[in-house]
Picture (cartoon, rainbow, N blue to C red):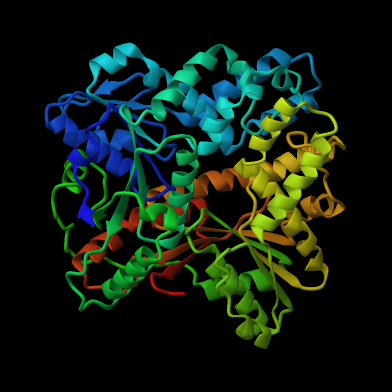
Length: 570
């Protein structure tokens, strides 16, 4: 595997960087843009990353129109605000119905359009102007996009039924992607944009991952979905790979072995893709000098000693608080890859060891749980097969839809069923049955639904109607569950994150989602913290020092209800 270099991507006009949150796609996109500009090319860099710190990196105010970067001649940066774009899009859809429909229905529509899919379609609406603009194509040698649209979004835009009367007649509850009919006048623009994306002579897709199991699986899924749409010009960049140069350090050695194991078991889908790597960089990508160094140098961050954080709780103290306050339903929430399953398991073990009757459930497909240990502790267990419950839910929706829709409209529903919200709802219904056990035992749940999904279900329940976007039914177990989840005396959501920019920003958005849904969150966990290890590896020491900023931010978000777990704890 070779190190990633600028000349591996410069052959096409358009470059799209995509990958799981926190893998470093924004940093690599910026480093590519700066590197090409340093070669004398005219570059336009466009980002819609909600957690973007581009204004800090480039040291100047940025906007959605484009600003030239003084220190990088030839580089222009556009920093699109995807949340603002989604809000404007949401209002453009809902405005015609204000005053014509009951306020309760308007509120329901607003929630329907508050999910991640709506943010993405709004972002793609902004993207499309840059992909299709002839003047931009002439002005710039390369146009680089940080964060590519998913296969789900692109398929939805290609569906004939997405532009049919089915959408405009479904104003009371459309897809989680929102009302595409509101953008019907842009149909041809989208068509041209999708065509450009699939043209290998014009576009290259850069899949960015880390050498860890979860982001590699996400990269494989994205690669497969985009290939099905004819987007085949792909390369894979493995970011933050630890090169085995100092095997004497125990922490570095363990990290190296863990990364190598993940790469040995890389998903089959990725094995045929040209793959490169970027070495682990100890310094934060917080300014132009560091970004410029990322793909060309071997700079090590400052070797000065770091101090471990103080005044935080341990996981044991967190569990003791859950026990003393009598919580009956405990969720671990957070983005994939932060360690929710491991932490949910440990919480269940500690509660059981204190004499509590505990039930643990997970959707982790790896399901690496030690059943013998659980049984010895008296913990009952269940596993939700996401694929199985999702397919059952889809079949239920299909059977209902077939009685009232044309074949073209069914194609729209079929694509809608591939959305992230559909999976959350299907899994949530399975959770609801398990949470009924909370009367008899403490239920610990790994991989919880978002606040947006909870609000979708609640809105539907309030109007005594089916889940409008998919025509599914709301079981009694779900109706009983929502009030229980809003009872802070019974339910606690433990937010799990890492001491890094993107995981913390995403966790902050999750917290706001939960507040909207009326769900209690007191405790936060920062998992896998290097600053609590005794590493002597110069790269890892510098990384540990860089964690302090994010630990302090989480301390504020959690009102100091923060537990930190050292790197390497399993």
